[in-house]
Length: 523
Length: 116
Image (cartoon, rainbow over all chains, first blue to last red; front, side, top):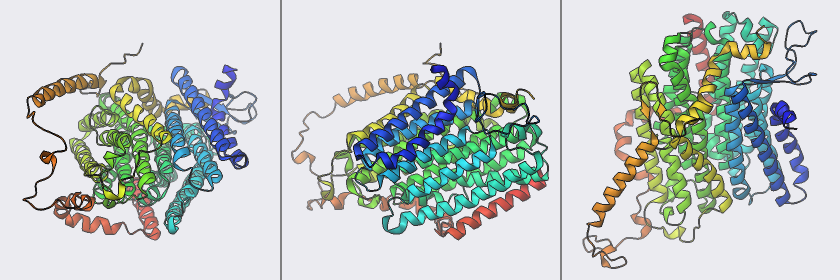
């Protein structure tokens, strides 16, 4: 039984949320309580599968799953002419890490959402789309096939757009969803053109196969740019970030927390393409600097645009852009020195580890911050910071969770944000000190911004209009508590996390030959 | 067996959050000891705890709280030139979003094809 589960875990990661999604409208007809139990069951099973698969991958190495094959690890059928023609999931340490991020955040968000969104109608559709979103994320980070990546990207985009528009909100949410959808569709079409170029050139869609044949021709260069730009836009990188504050601020808070992970799935795609598909065939320094510049722009513009915001979710959305910049910076520095082994050993791997560590840290503390914003909205019905104040008197636990998230995002010890930022600062300093200084200044501005938010929401006397406000419901607190606990634990014990999860992911990302060998068997 | 309490290696240095936590606890104890030597005649709920505004009556609670828009006025004023450019760039119009995206794509194609 255990062997069957482990062998089929990559497929189960997609199958469970898909079955859960399509059954939810029917099960929801029984009663809201049964629907909630069903969705929670599906999410719990998905999370357990992701954790099981991750433990297997971190212990035993990359796992592949070939759909429709007689044997799940038979990547190349005997009569295929040496081409992996079937859909293959390739789960290396980087994929496993992203699956864990998606699963844990999804689980915490669902716990929160069952309480926070219960007052709304149309919840069958809401949770159907939520589970489709999970399936999209899991598929994007698991697949070893580029066309499949496009399909899961579309599943994720369509479900996300539906969820952003869910509350309508006088048409504003629908407008935000439409903007997101238009950009996502154009981006996905451009990615499809890039994939078409690879298919035309290399007669394959499998990432490992294309990587093994990569020539880096002019067409490959164009395909690289098309895919990098589209995925950078999807992950909210400046100056293609404009959809992010609109979509993040108008989506229900539980969905905003998931949108953070959805953006990170695009970030994963970007890293997968440059490291696994191209690796040293490209001019790593030039492309590395492109990613670094996108990162620096995201950090600076994100945080400076956050400071004057008056809508707390819009403010947090700009911070999400800013934090994405740190990830791009760290991994970009790793890419810039890729192929130069002494520099990789000196600071390249640490920079990549810092950037990748920041992905999981950001998912946890930013998810937590969006959930606290949602809890506040749940009680007082506004996101407008000018209308808030004194809520620390009545929402003490929410305030504590907010403080944990705010200190983590600002890079204050001993929370997780500090650990990953420290790795980024020190490794980036060795590459280019100016970049490290910019990163530190951005952290200071982040702290300043969250001091403003903390003061505006929680400090001051209890305002007359909020005399009767109560603490957020317990299930919402549990959802926030799960993320807050991870923020603290990752901050207090960073090295085991780096050793156990992050370093294997960074090395798997940089190790193109290992990825190819896992699929093609060293062919 | 993984060392749970291992210091975080940053390539050029180390960071041990538990040592930092220990130092924080020591600092907190020192702060507490200093605090204990403070004024002991403080009584909650008496005139000692009401605000003194030169004899004027205390405004409504809602008027006392400094709202978000009133924070960081100096910072925003100092960077007015930057914000006068960057805020209007966020037009909220989807056509502009698409143009930025396509513009960046075109610029990247030029950079990659020329420099790679």
